Structures are given as structure tokens and as C-alpha cells.
Image (cartoon, rainbow, N blue to C red; front, side, top):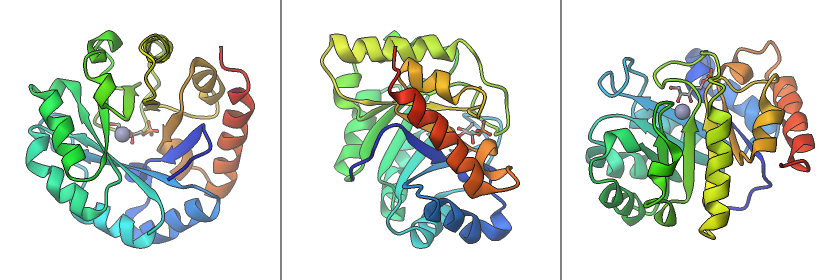
Length: 229
Ligand code: DX5
Ligand code: ZN
């Protein structure tokens, strides 16, 4: 699948699950191609969200969308097959949850999915250097994972710049994604810093008018993309 960067990726965690089909439909009709699914196990993070059944449902609702599955779970290897079968296009795992990260990444690829590695706010970006040649995406958490609707942690911007630098220096081509507290107030700055994929939960789904908010966010992101510094 080819995308025009930067990509806006709504996280359905903030959606109204009693009308999930309708809200996802509003997103895809507004041109959204990439949907972010947050999987939380109540162990790695202090909250439980949903499992592969919902990913399968999202796949049915949006057969052509790119499904980005963010695993905030312990022992992700045990569930990779489930999420791949449910229709994930990309599976991201946390650096902090994987003692054998390289093996886990290989396992994701073996199941036919693109691979992502995620760092929590307290984890330095440079720790990802050895795995980045094998990853399709690096995700910078800009809140402590576990809940939607939290405030953006400012220090995340420098990590995005650092990853961009590493990508240039090592001549790699992984995508850079940011997740948590992304909204109208910071999307331009995040794109200017080098973010390719912007995850937005509350900002999209808690808006009074979802398609309008998507257009506002995308417009700002596009304007800033000519301006990466
Ligand atoms: C946080 C999740 C995020 C979250 C983003 O643990 O990984 O994807 O849903 O939500 P907002 O945009 O509301 O911060
Ligand atoms: Zn997420």
C-alpha cells in the first residue's frame, strides 16, 4: 500500500464502540486509509482495551484500510499469529516488553505483517539503533501508554528529530510514528520535526464533527510537511 505522507491515523480507542462501524465509516469517507488499534492487557499497561476480535471487526468494516496494531502487552509473541490472522497489516511491539526483540520482529514478519518497534517516554531513542534496520516503523510514545486523552509530553519532539537523524545517518527508511496527545495544537510541530504517521484518538473521535476534525488535522499536517526542519 502506498501512502502520501504525512498520514493521519485515528486510534479507535477513543471511538464510541456502540457505533464503531458508523464512526470508522466517517473516517474512511473523509479519506482516512490508516487505522490505529490499541491492544492493552492490564499487565504491561494498567488498562485493558480489546483483543483480536475487534481487529477482525475493524477489518470487516474497513476492508481496504491499513490496520496498524499497537501491542501494549506482555509476551507479544504469543499473540502475533492471532492479530495477523485478524487482519493486521503492521504489528508494533514495545522495546520494554521484548527481551528478544529481534526474534519478535522476525516472528511478525514471518506472519506476513510489517514490523514496528515502540518506545515509552522514558526510553531513549538511540536504544533502537540495532533493530531499526529490521523495522518498518519506529513509534515514539508521547504519553505513558495505557489511556487515551492524556497530555502530550514535550520531550517526545527531540526523540522524533533523533530518529530522523539516525534514519539519515544509517541510510534506512523506516517510518516515524508518534502516538499520544496529538491534536490541532501540536500536529504542525510534530510534522516539522519529521513525523510520518500521526496517531490521534480523542482529537478525532471526541470531536463534534469527526470528518471536519480530520480535515483540520490533515490540512495542518500537509502544510507543515513542506517545512520539515
Ligand atoms: C495510548 C494509546 C494511544 C491513544 C491515543 O496508550 O497507545 O494510541 O489511544 O489517544 P489520544 O490521541 O487520545 O492521546
Ligand atoms: Zn497506540
